Length: 264
Length: 229
Image (tube, rainbow over all chains, first blue to last red; front, top):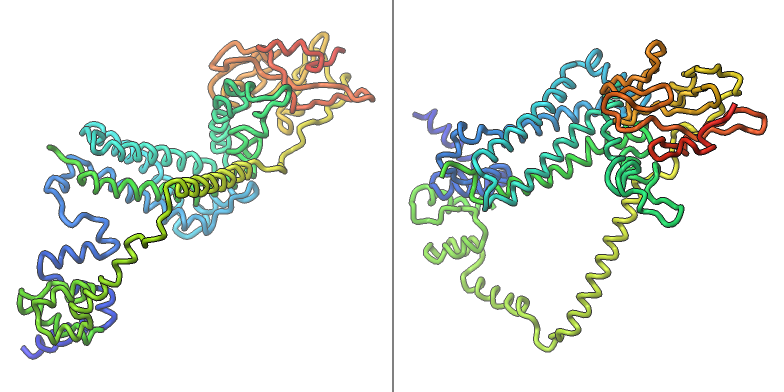
């Protein structure tokens, strides 16, 4: 009994310290309203809705594919940051560093987690899209969020594309050569594309091999040092930055468009 | 802070009348305090009267002050000017950003090279000496020498010259080209490209890869696309 008393005293001391009260503003939630306030006041908890429709927890309907995509994105972010400690994006070091990540670096599976995670994310994103399509969840009022999702799909593909070059092996170089040649065939802004010769004044052609879309993408005429650096920066900073902005909008609209979709 | 809230918090756990958020923002606490005891009001520090006073002070700021009304014409004029300036700045920065993506200096190999003398090449030969370094085959037939690009016209891989079969075969998607560069199998949509080839005053061959000649455009008859021997 007295022990219990001492414990209660200690408990009440702890919850009344300034540190505790500064962190947990709402106090110990004992009423439904307080519980709601706890969720609303915390930055991480407020990402979840205060209350859920019953169908939202049914995995059968959503497959949890959106959530899994985001989870894999987080895994890729963490492993990606860790890989950046060892990987140097230069023609001289890139390929060797990739080998070293497997052979010499402790926990040599880190790169494989990143690689398999990347494959998995493409799969989960596609399945997420498939589910949204099959359940008709792209229909109003969620049509805007579908469009945001399409942009996120493209960004996921671009992440895969830029990450593909970084190992700097033959597969990588030629895959990006093929991919960037497609950019060179873009209508009007690619040298090989239709209509590019129309953008000219007299003999001066504006779209040349040093001024077309492919050139801007590679930072040169071929897949080389500049392309490697450019793709590295896009893969590690540029695209994730843009992606996060669209993800914020995406998650926000999931809530604002009536919560997670379910059988009507 | 914690001392102030202590009594309120304890009370809230015992009775249900008290406002459920002990550390809620001051205004809420003051509002709830209308029903609660006065002693709490003093502790929190804002009385309902004070609150009213505050809001009374705040009102004029929200309203547009009289006498400073701008007429519609002036407003539109300044708004248009402001938005134009804004658009100009954004557009200017956008243009600069776009230009920034195109480097002025390339750390790439020179696009022209010297390729020896016509006598270095035998008739009927596909010379692969410059394939690795320059991505060019030098081909000599009965009457001329030309420089053939080693870039597959399908998607840019490098085909292999197969001497025994007399063709260039791309390993990526199976495109095949005759010795002269004409495509005959696989997905390649057009023949390989040829480069500008000239002779220096001393007779040495100079290949310039910045100028290309495409058969489908009828450019292979251009005198710069071959050397007569």
